[in-house]
Length: 210
Image 1 (spheres, rainbow, N blue to C red):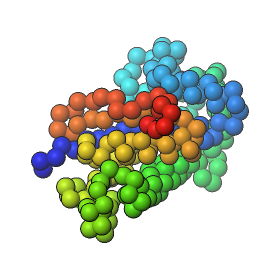
Image 2: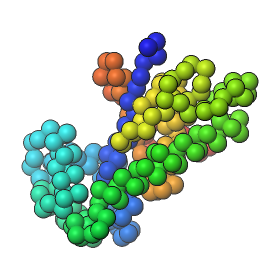
Image 3: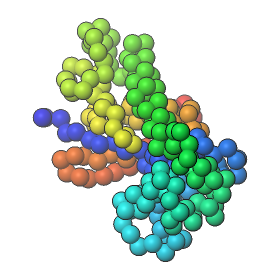
Image 4: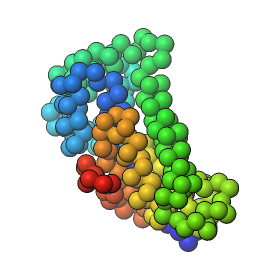
């Protein structure tokens, strides 16, 4: 109760995951440029849509997971025609776009990131001293005990955590996304008690680390 809880979010996580399907180099470059800005705002602006951001994101998911030819489809077909064709074909596939996206996200946030964080702790390259580390039986906890090093709860498009751990976790998450999809994601943080949202990490990290 004495430690504020934060919601850490990977900006435009679902569009980012589409990089895993973008086989055409030119389309992949286009998608990355859109992600560097605000892809949802770009779609709304070009298509003359005045809906709020959350509704646009819902319409994006309707196109992506339902292969519905809405205004998001119009935008994608213009700028990313090959990727759009793959999305539309996914409707009739045994395992569609929702399955693909959830699989990529789970691989990164539920498998890759926790393994890397545990490795950092066990090898002594994390932020905690060795005396504390030797007392741990489960370094990744969902309880937030101050004597334990990392509070990490994977969530859709991000995780719940404590401010004290954000640097190490965010850097690990960004590295995992880059290794899997070739893109440095932007991470935002929102304090649950106040709703205040800020950007935590963005852009290509400097040489030598995030």
